View 1 (cartoon, one colour):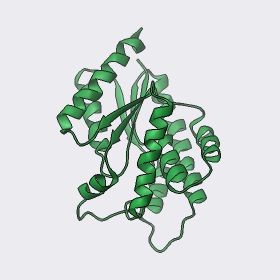
View 2 (tube, helix red, strand yellow):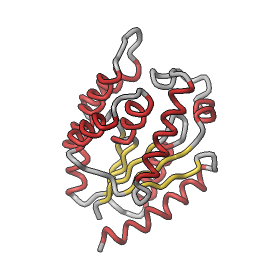
View 3 (tube, rainbow, N blue to C red):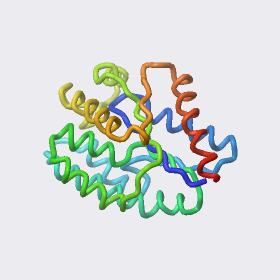
Length: 208
């Protein structure tokens, strides 16, 4: 029943909420599942994640971001994602390599072929069977953050976030069989049901 599902989207899209909802639903059905996220979880990932998102007064270049996110990703794939898939579990990951393509490739303007090669090395070629994109305008997504403390990426200008949204839609358009694009302005319950309808179609296929 091994199945790898990732959640993607811009700031404030609600992907973490929906990843958690899917995990709980699978658990209630006694389907072995693991919920994880990038760039945290592993010891290295936690350290890099805090630095990449919250470092103040530090000028981190786009290439450095690309390499550090992928260092964290390589650890996550090796120590958590692959072992659990090999044990037949459903692995749900809040962000994966598509985030790097969207943020560092489209958002920061790094060469997309370079991003692709480095991503592939870190993931060892492991791709999700399903990627859920919670699609929302950059303005509405950021507005949802309200008065929360904003990390380095959330503080970027609106043009950066527009590029990320456009990048995600381009990625989804290039691989429509892998991506499920969901309007993130709908109610949480409606979004959850749309996602479950797609996931439930994949589960029998995995059992077979």
